[in-house]
Length: 99
Image (cartoon, rainbow, N blue to C red; front, side, top):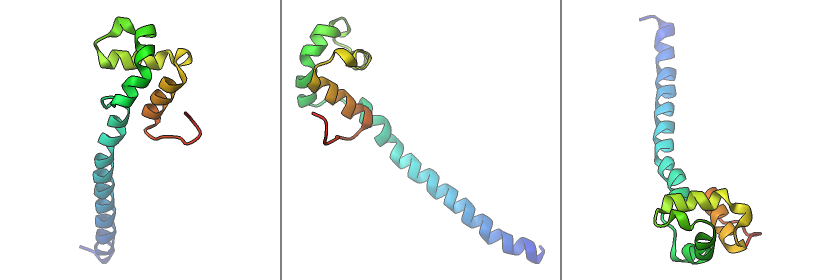
């Protein structure tokens, strides 16, 4: 092994370990990013959207995934409360200027 190869080995190992650490961090974050949008609605969220579900998406009852998709596709027709719930679920965070 040449001197040049010996000096490159530690930097390659550092790069490898950084890549592994980044992959582990991203894997840890992915379930939170995916689940923020598609987790089961809370009682408050259900209450905020109940009338809109019956008015706009009753044909999708009892499938919660289909109901949520229906509500998302009809955001312009939703009540203010339900629109807020859907936007919070889509962004995964609450905005202080809405509601």
